[in-house]
Image (cartoon, rainbow, N blue to C red):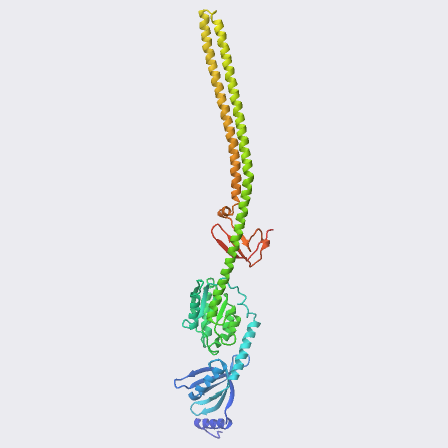
Amino acid sequence: MINEQLKLSELNGRVKKAIAETFTAPTWVIAEIAELKVNRNGHCYLVLIEKEENGDAIVAQAKATIWSYTFRMLKPYFESTTGQVLSEGIKVLVSVSVEFHELYGYSLNIRDIDPTYTMGDMARRRREIILRLQNEGVADMNKELTLPLVPQKIAIISSPTAAGYQDFIDQLAKNQAGYHFHLRLFPAVMQGNQAESSIIGALEQIYLYESFFDAVVIIRGGGSQADLSCFDNYNLAYFITQFPLPVITGIGHEKDDSIVDMVAHTRLKTPTAVAEFLISGITQFDIRLDELKNRFIQGIGELINSAKSDVEQLTRILIPIVKEKIVSGNARLNKTMWRFDNRLKLFIQNQTYQLARTEETFKNEFSNFSQVQLRALEKSTRALSVILQRIILINNELLKRKIQQSEKSTKNILSQNLHYLELSIQKAMLTDPAKILARGYSITTYNGRALKDTDSITKNVIIETRLYKGNIISEVQTIIKEG
């Protein structure tokens, strides 16, 4: 049986009265801001929620308002105290009056806020993020990457209109040493709720060009703690720890380092400081390169001087030997020619003597010969003359051959001696380092000394290789031992 019937307005009236009688004074409430909107009149409309502990499920929700007069005072007070923008996603401790309107229902009117609670909650969340990254073993992963000795290809994450970005570009472009950098901007929002997804999106684009860039620079101009709170974000910090390139930050925090600074490879205070860091790195490498060049030149000079000394010593040894060989060859040649000359003279004298005797014999016996005998004798004489002429021709031919053989033998001796001298000189010239380099060989030095084996070096040292044209500076990554 229905005892009482109420109109909805009457029920709402009773609820309003009960709430007013129960909550006679403002009440402090802990909640998280799920939504926050400010209309053109300056009134702030919020949705407050409570999540279950150790989870994201919403267990309570209520609408709330901050009227424009109160909002104009509470917002700057909260943000200047906490360094955090009054925005969605933060936990607050607010003083509220509980209200119920017959037409619009239940709502909370925020009259005051305690920023110290939010600061404590922010500090707690920051500690939790740092501890989580450490427990996951990723906090130092980006720091373990190797920054190139000369990082010149730089990917930049910044707002293109930020003053800090322009300062960074100007500093690199106007460096006194004239070093050249390859720079590419990947624009991103650098503050507010969109910063996290925007910076991660820029990192994802850079990842597509991982093999080209040497490092990533995240920079922005200075700002309040509230503007930079997005860099205390777990997702952004975790993404940086997993990034395959060294990340250098120049975010411009006024006080403590952000979590992004803590996990980055290198943390610097401002964009200008990042530019100076990059220039300084190349300057130090340039100085080291000059030192290595001077040591190499000195080492090569010493090698050349040593080789020249060896060549000079070898030349001093060879010249007397070659001279002795030439003198000895000339003596043998002169002796051989003297023997042939004497033999020829004796042969001619003997033949002349024999001919004279024959002729004298013919004359003595000529008067006793008859005409027939004379003709026979004349015939025999002509035959003998022919024979003698042939003998002379044969002997002359033999003499010429012996002379030619002697000349050939002498030339061979001289040629052999000259060839031996040329080989000795060529052998000496082969020790010239410039000739060795020109044939495709190279000289590798470490600390100014030529390397002959792998026992003199270790990994990660800088070595220098001299080619016929130009030098190569290398860092040892792998050493392979013989055997």
